Image (cartoon, rainbow, N blue to C red; front, side, top):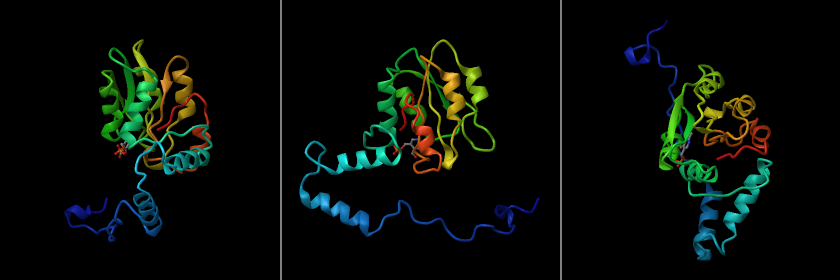
Length: 188
Ligand SMILES: Cc1ncc(COP(=O)(O)O)c(C=O)c1O
C-alpha cells in the first residue's frame, strides 16, 4: 500500500473542494424577488407553494410539504407516525446526527444499526435482527446518492411498522422517483 499523503506520500487530491453552498444569479434574483415583494411568510406567499408543487412533481410524489430544514422534516415525519415514549426507531449508525435526534426529540429510543461496507446504507439483515415488539419505524438514509434497499426494508417493516427514508443526501439521485413513489413511504 502506498504511503498515505498524511505521512508524506503522494496526494491524489490536489484541488480544494468547491465553495458550498453553491448559488448564482438565479438564486440571487429569486431572493430579491421575495425580499422586495414584502411577502416574507408562507400564508399569502406563493413561492413556497410553487416550490412544493414543483418538488413533488419532480419526484412523482402526490404531495410535498416544505419545512425549514432536514431536521424539521424528520421531526414532522416522527410526529406523523405518532412516534413517542416507549417506542424504538431503527436508524443507521453512519449518518448526520439529526436522524437520531429527531427520534430522541419525541421521547422514543433510536436503535443504531450498522451500515453496509459498499454503500454505507443501513444493512437490512441487521435491521431484521434489531426489530423488537417496540419498534415503531425504520429510518433509512440514502448516503451520498447510494439508495438504501427500500424494497427489502419495506418487506421487513410491513404493517404496522413504518419506514421513512431520510433523503437529505439523495435529492435527484437516479432511482429517487422509483423509490419515493411507494405510497407507504414517508420521505424527508
Ligand atoms: C442525512 C441527513 N439527515 C438530516 C440532516 C439535517 O438537515 P438540516 O441540516 O437541513 O437540518 C442532514 C444534514 O446534513 C443529513 O445529512
